[in-house]
Image (cartoon, rainbow, N blue to C red):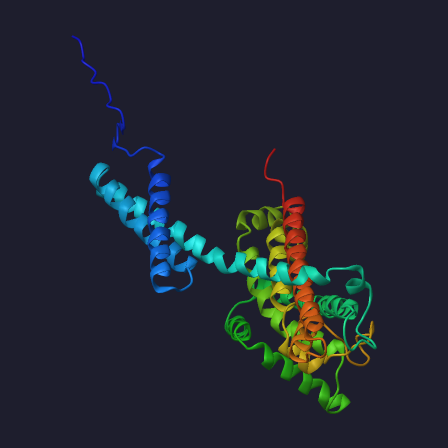
Length: 359
C-alpha cells in the first residue's frame, strides 16, 4: 500500500496559507510613503507647514487596515486578527516612545550648552548673569535624598515584613489601608506636613535640608512598603517551612532566607522610590527653600536642590535671560542622568545579588 504525499504549495504551511515575511515591512513602507505624499500635497496646496505627527498617525492607520485586509484574504480571520492586534500593540509602543524620545532630545539639545567644568565645580554665589554652576544644588539633592532613603527604607522594609510575616487581623488591614492612602497623597501635602511639624518646635519660617528629607520620606515610605511587600510574598513558603523544619527561628529565617531571596526585587523597589521623589519640587521649595551658597549641613539653614534650582533659574530670569535658561536645562539634564544612574545601579544589584537558582 502506497501513500501519495501532496507537495506543499509555495506560500503555505500545514497550518494554512501565509503571507511572506517581508509583506508587513512592504505594506508599512507603502503606507507611510502614501501618507507622507498626501500630507505633503495638502501642505503645498494650503501653504501651511508639514504635519509630521499627522502623517505618521495616518500612515499607521493605513498600515493596520491594509495589512489586516491582506491577511484576512490570504490567511484567514484568525491570522488577520492576530496581525491587527500585533500591529496595534506595536503602534501603541511607538506612540508611547514619542514623548520620551522627544523629551530626551530636547533636554540634551538645550542642556549640553552648559555642560562644562564650571557648572559642576561652582555655585551661584555672587553670580548675577552668565557663569556659575549647580554644585550646591547637586550636593543638596544627594544629601536630602540620602537622608530620605535612610529614614524611609528601614521603616518601609520593616512595615512590609510585619504585613507579610506577622500581620494578622484588624491592625494589618488598617496599616494596609493607610499605606494605600499615603501612596496617593499629593507631594505638596507631604511638604506642608513636614514644615508644620518642624514649625511647631523651631518656629515659623524654618527652612532646613532635614525637613525636606522628612517630606520626601513621607512620599517614599508607601512605595517602599508596597514594592517590598510584593517581593516578600513571592518568596515560596516551602523555603520558610524548610528553614523551620531545621529548627531555625522565625526572625533568623526572615533574615537569612526570605530577605536574601527577595533582595533583588526589594532593591529595585527602593530605587524606584528614590527616582519617584528625587525630582519633587514643591515639597522642597516649602521645606528646604533655595539658596545660592554651598551648604553641607542638613540641620542648618536653607539647602538648594536640583529641582528647585531648575525652577528658580527658569522663574527668576535675569539679564541675560539665555544664561538662566541654559543653567536650568543643564540642571534638568543632570537630574535625568542621576535617575538613569540609580536605575543602572538597581539593575546591577539585582543581577549580582539575586539568588542563584542553577546548579
